[in-house]
Image (cartoon, rainbow over all chains, first blue to last red; front, side, top):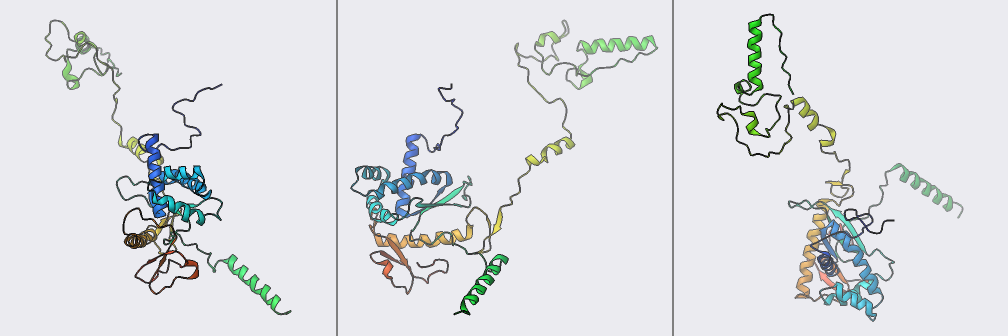
Length: 165
Length: 182
């Protein structure tokens, strides 16, 4: 029976190692969460955005409890370094996401960074933000065979409904 | 280790000459034959320099090495260009071809299937930059985040009943076609 883990095996570890130390990792993620709440859309390396996403969504879940909740206020106080954003979180974001059950953020990959490192970059945004949309939802083209057949079927059904009346 | 084949000649004088030459080669008294290096059956590095230098003949050619020398691996033969080509052009060394490149339906530039189009993203980024400059002008200073939602209106647009109570950001241009008002 294995009672200790070998140092070089990382099976099942979910947290990435970012920054200089575990404390530095939390500070990094905290800065990113603050920036996301302030600007509602940020562009950062993909690994950091992916790591930060879970923390941001849990913070919004805490905010949904309301600002009278002691734990929610302590969480917001820790995670948001700029204290005017605590007001924004409880008064703007919590009502905005009240109807949603989860997944308040959208993470999309963008072309690699232009610098020397060519890092994998991502843009993470809160849904329902007032900024221009990143991806336009596209309907399938009407010229495909399946869509033409469906269109014909719909027209036949309409004609059949039209004549008896 | 190369093996020198001694040719058995019927002439005894030739045989005596060959035996003398062989003796000299074995004792390392004939370094000139291999262009200054030791005979091919010797090891890559000598352990004891003193053992190879014969007594009584000066140490003119003997290299002065320290007592303990480490054996190192060294290539024995030159890799031919054919072998080199086989190694360099092996499929695992070539760059993988990407089959996930598509055409963006909006602008027609190339994009990877799972990545946003670079041109369209640059367009959106530039517009958000201008919107953020307007927000900065409206807020006036740092740490003035509003406690109400924000809505962006372009030239000639009036706030609808959905935009009640929201902070209005004006942009002095026509609404772009890809930014649908909702």
